[in-house]
Length: 329
Picture 1 (cartoon, helix red, strand yellow):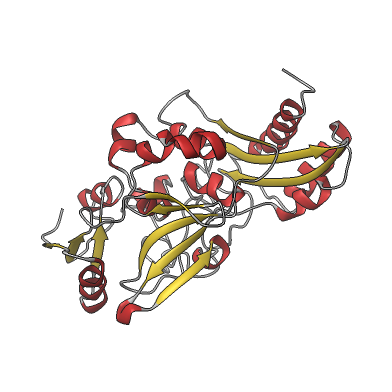
Picture 2: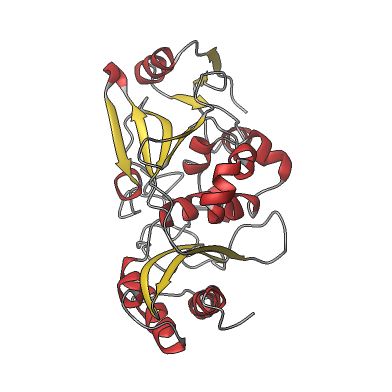
């Protein structure tokens, strides 16, 4: 780990001003991802601004019936919150499926959304990686790419986003509140927050230097049933090969609303709008579910070791939707 300067922020404005003004400065809260990257010298910030004591730890019911979740709420507290367990159960399920209890006790909501990929080659400084060292190439494309993306990747990067929580929040149509230098405040959808890899995979979000996520906003709870399923190599503390966040509302024998978001398949968290359009208005059943899976995976491309993900994602979507409509136990 390289030498760095440490500063504890006294308020939000102070934190934003410090990181905005100092090249190489970074925010740190729980540090569950950043400190690992610093130890390996994947990340080498010259200045850390500690925001862990800022008053961004509340979970508040919004006037319209949604939630405002402070960016420093821990993953454990969010998963355990009665309002989340009651009205957004898939979010609680997703958080509890990720990491260990100790990490969830430290990891913050804002940090979870901004955590970096777990690609083997990103963590190995001896290997080329455009996300870590732009212009060096992507070793994963011809390497051991079992955990890598099959949708939304580019010729420059096939890494996936590792967050379980972000997949659930994408299905729930979450937005983030931010504050930047000069007090500029923004509210961003996930589509506006995250950047696809394109030819610059090292630029992962559209946040400006020093722009801080202050809260996550969830709209009013959706109707119907919610489910989060994570398929992985072992039952605990493993990243998803395929995960699925699903919301399904059936009324009078027809699917009235559907929200579908996959994890483990893509570089950025987002909804599968095509699959949702196939489902809405149709009668639930194997034919409809398979058609939705085909639409969700249209254009999917497997590599030497991850082609299985395409079939696995299809089976996972069909199985979850069948269970949600009581067609299978």
